[in-house]
Image (cartoon, rainbow, N blue to C red; front, side, top):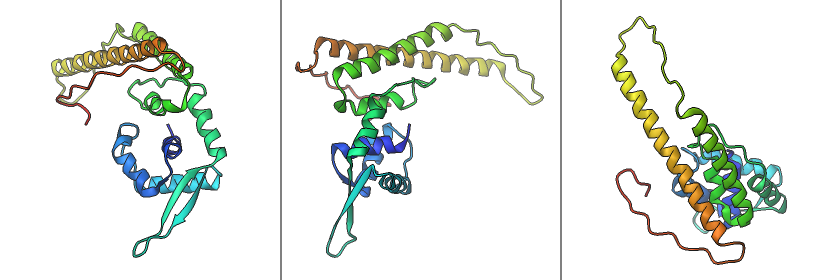
Length: 204
């Protein structure tokens, strides 16, 4: 998942300065991409401007550094939409942000396009569950340094159970969203979701 795709989506929502884009990546964007640095944002903007995907205007600020406001060009819009609505190949790890980034910009899709995206994700994850959930996870250990097999087995089982629960929850959420979309075809009002109950480890 490229930083450029995220920045194009954010800029298509609203023209922004580099500082505003970095602020987004530090708040909402932190759940889409880890540890994005200011230098990476400006490097991506410069590259996209060289390719004709974005342009900027300069706003004079008395007593302060002039601000560059970036906007997406027609070519940049085409590049973004081709990626957003183009073929989606689920990564091997469902935790990777590929699906989440696309869904973040669902407002630029039709409901039919979003349904197709969810269908691909659900089918891929259900296939993985059927193929790998009950795999033989035993492994031989041959080492010359101290090794606690009981501890290793306990932690491995803890990881397996936690991963299985997380993956099942992910698939269930995708299926629930798919059901909401099927009940509200293009143009029909969408239902509201219940408030999120926060708890230990919940995203803020």
